[in-house]
Image 1 (tube, rainbow, N blue to C red):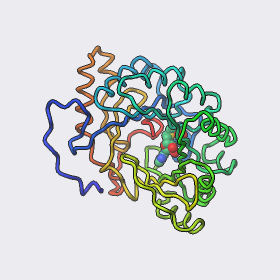
Image 2 (tube, rainbow, N blue to C red):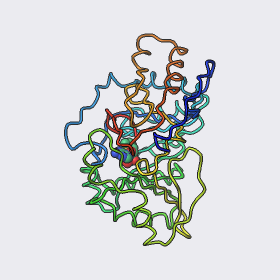
Image 3 (cartoon, helix red, strand yellow):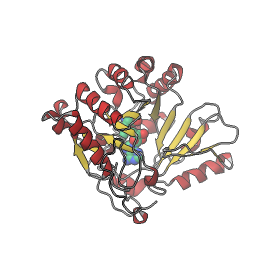
Image 4 (cartoon, protein in one colour):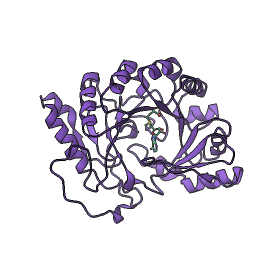
Length: 343
Ligand code: SAM
């Protein structure tokens, strides 16, 4: 639904304990950026130069993060995804995963990673309670991969993917951002991975985040175009029934083991069913990926606030979550890049 078609605001409920916004959307999914740093520099995520990373003491410590997670869990959040930056470079990740998964109320814990370091820690992460991973890679061509990540090695990522599969961090989903002039023709090879593997290959439209506006303007490929390319190769895709809260529209190639998802924030926004907010690595609660409105939980916590005060901030923040990101209307003020907010 477009921003122009947003519904009328409901009256606030004064005694709510579960996070719900003024449009009646229930929030139960928290994406947490564990760090703003990354070991890749993907062309759709970060500018080539000029990235400034936050000093460590500005980021939430493990104790602060776990305290906030308990408060989110008390506010009705049941699903957590760890992301970044690159979550696998966060120190003590396995211990953090164990502590998060044992938080009362947290039912599902997943992670989005570029996979580079995954072969070393996949089994430990699984044993600590991580349920599954999404991996991000945009091509099967090692040279193009190096170009799109500005230096990454696909063979190591592939080892990470196999380790995740062996460790049972499944079902595995793979994210690829489709960019004209980079990988729009590679989508056929990527989709072919699902023929004999139980993976979900997801094709993403690039979003105009801070620092990559030009890439968006010059290279955005719509999901319709990608789907047409796949159908030209594989024949008509077969629809797979929708899962509530999943931003992907899911299809499959006839006879394949895996699935194909299209995530289309630009051409087919899914704001009406949004169930998520984001906690940036510096403790800012980001209400919508592409809107600047944030609530500083870190500074309030560091100034001695009790849990009840923090919970009021979380619930009040969720209440004022913007209706939609407004990309289609050209209404974009991101302020921070994807790696800083947590994709
Ligand atoms: N480093 C991890 C990774 O590569 O998966 C996690 C962080 S990354 C920001 C999370 C996801 O955001 C990746 O799947 C990436 O493809 C996606 N992403 C990054 N920038 C994007 C953009 N401008 N538009 C759409 N998706 C983007």
